[in-house]
Length: 105
Length: 230
Image (cartoon, rainbow over all chains, first blue to last red; front, side):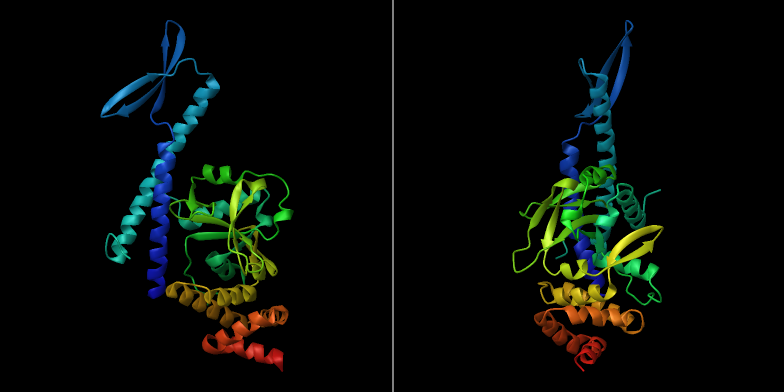
């Protein structure tokens, strides 16, 4: 039983560190989605994202298709990492409950 | 459906294999136990408890060969980098698993982080890992050829490092795992001679430490050591 409690405590510490790492990485990645609009036969790209409860659409200027693709990948990575963060947080809560409190020693 | 810890672990091994670097690492730490249980004869008595840390030892840094961006590979798999302490050692976390790279630190030097430039990673240098690196065994696990330490080397290293643990609970866990692996070795006629072969090559100081631990925790190891002395 002591061994299991020790493993859980170790796991809790690991997950707390992972939570910080995911948060840091997510903060450095672009969020939102890329929208393309065709105006007078020309295609324009915008980055749409939520800010203070409102949807903001930011014109991406003359970005090359490679740059837009790169941005798309970054947004995709952010979504994946946000999913991971949710799982980390869920696991932290679960272990905290198993160890009997929010801040087990 | 969410991947389980085992799914992620196996996928990690496959990705390392695809990149041609699985044969350059040795799986050490508690993840050896499920591999021993799966691949060795009559090993189902071994403990099942393991941590989330998948420890990968790089036994021969000079033999790494071609460049592979392991850091990017892990990032693609959803791992995130976590910096440990101020030594510059970076580990890779996912909700289910942490991947750590390790290298042997010889002598009494301080345990420190080393940059493995060819793989774009850092590895932590730790003492006593050469005991594992010197006795590799190749196992077939889920269709992959994976290097792990000989169970005898694994058990002896666990015993030795238990004396360096600051946390009592970790020390106890090391001892319990080592004793369970020694019980398995003692009951297996293929493994017993390997234990003796390794014991014969250990430095006197290590043998003295092991003898003290064996007399307290493992009569079976003590018996094997006495047989060698006779």
